[in-house]
Length: 116
Image (cartoon, rainbow, N blue to C red; front, top):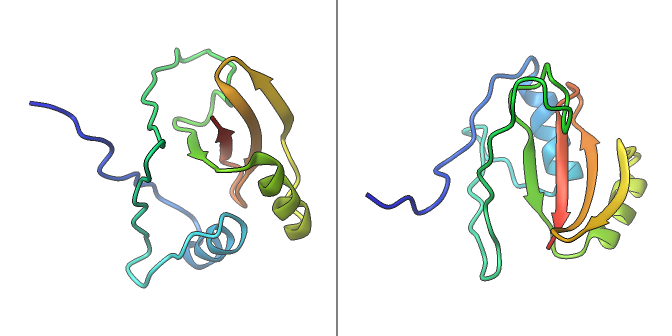
C-alpha cells in the first residue's frame, strides 16, 4: 500500500452557512452545494502529516486538528486578509521551513497559512 495524499478533511460545525461563506470569502475556496470543495494540488505543493503531543502548545490544546494551507505568496495573502478584516493571530514568522501566519475562522479554529 502507498499513501498518495489526503483524501479529505471533515469536521462538524455549528453554522454551516456562516462557515461556508467565511472560507469562500476569506480563503477564496469555492464551496459547492454539497458543503465542500476539491483542492487539486499543483506541482511544488506538499502535504505535511504530523503528530503533536496532547500538551504541545504549537496550536491550542483544545483544538484537535489544525489546518495548514500552502499559499503562493504570503505577503499577498496578508494584504487580502487585511482587506477582509481578518486579524492575524500570529504575525509572519520565517524559519528554515518557510514563512507562516495564523488566523482563526469564525468558530475559533486556528488555521496556518504557509509559503514554502
